[in-house]
Length: 59
Image 1 (cartoon, rainbow, N blue to C red):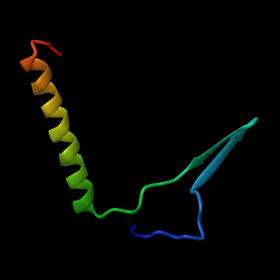
Image 2: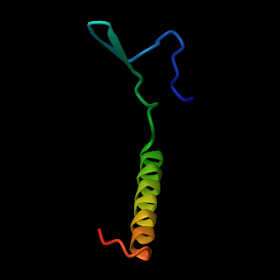
Image 3: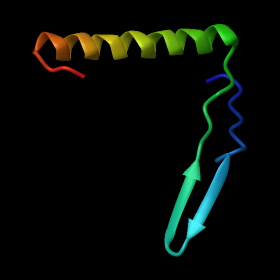
Image 4: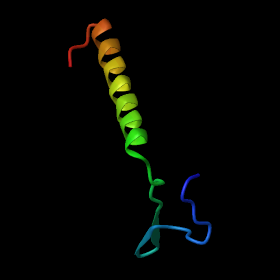
């Protein structure tokens, strides 16, 4: 994992009563990596749309 700091366990922690929520931020990404992730999400979304339309479901 890039930019992983083993000494840093969580980026943020919230506590409310008996509940603790630990937040772990994603690693830093280059612009190219971000664009690739967005492209993959976009492709997956269109695959879902096409699949639903093929079943006769309009969205």
